[in-house]
Image (cartoon, rainbow, N blue to C red; front, side, top):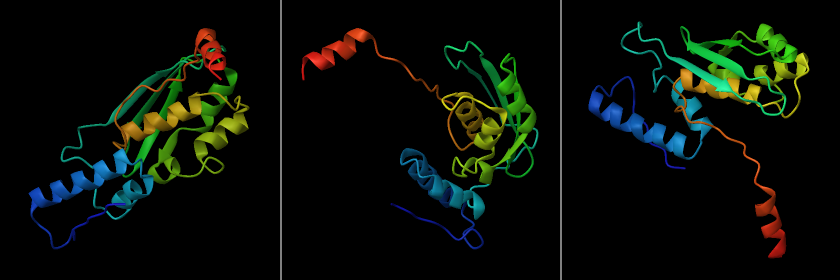
Length: 172
């Protein structure tokens, strides 16, 4: 793992700080190194508060879970500190509605917890969500974008056609 850092107390050159930060963030994003990204936030090297507090970071997604036919709108808004508010709406699934009632805020730390302790997945389990429901993952992705930990990029699970599957079996 490539890692470089600067002393945030003595290094006052803003260009050097920005260049170093870009190296660290690119390293974290392109290697999906959540530990590096978490280190940046915890040690204040990457300050999530913008120069203008009127610039609210918000992320909104529409998640289409599939055969159940219960799409969901998810909005995450960056709050003070390293928190986001979560709002799930437009979903007729009673399990997602229960999950939404249990899950109104997430912290940066919450996002990086393992699935068994992650508040999103804990709320999904308490609500009786189907294990393969994509809504919990969509909540986490939306929160990551609102906290500026990830770029907004569509996620897709796509079933391949029978023809492709048959073609693969014919070549074996």
